[in-house]
Amino acid sequence: MKKQILTFYECEHYGDLDNYIDDIVACGGTIESKRLNYDEEEGVIECSIPNDFWMKFKTTNSYEFLN
Image (cartoon, rainbow, N blue to C red; front, side, top):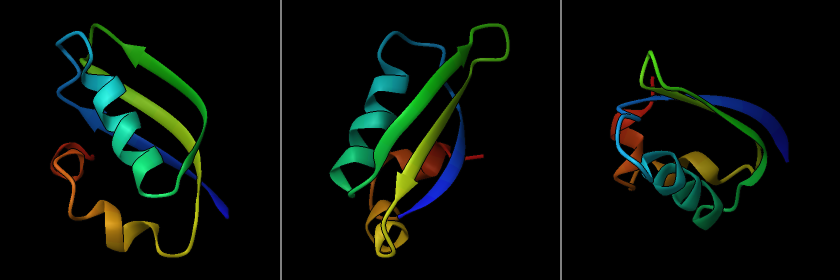
């Protein structure tokens, strides 16, 4: 697994960041930390991901909101 920092926009609604986290975990990622910038409506997630993560993650709705 390798460390990755993922930044998402469109985090203005309650639960948006949790939805992104759910997709990361479903694709094999492990969440190390998360933070939400309410003013910028941006979420930052530090995670560890396996080699096949991107192939799976690109099929999720969360991928569209990745900066």
